[in-house]
Length: 185
Image (tube, rainbow, N blue to C red; front, side, top):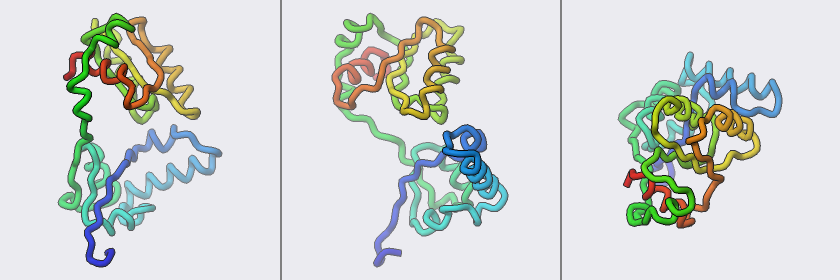
């Protein structure tokens, strides 16, 4: 430990075999290494790469129950050392007006999905779930280089009522207006 100080690690872990198999890799050997690491985590969590860093921490703070379960199962971390801390929301989003978004896109009361468009976040499943509904869907976010094909797959699967908007800066008034227009706040 660090001179008596408590160590808390904010985790960002998504450890599925599907992710190991489909995550971009520079070469087949690198992908094979990811798959082997995942199998080691499942078969022998005490031998998983990077487990030592997690075990040195006094507490781990994932941002979902699913991530907490994965950390416990894949790394054999005692559950009592894992404390879920959900992501916060900037208060300005609650105080925003929907007018700017409605004026620009003519939409209100829709499902809003923001963030990087990538397989791990599974926007494709959201698109498929809403396909036969009468709910509108707005996806705001870009797809960095290795995720461009996934973004295209989402666009190909989407019906006409799905609006894709490139990434917006966190401080862009259109972003906070979109949150207000979707009816979530």
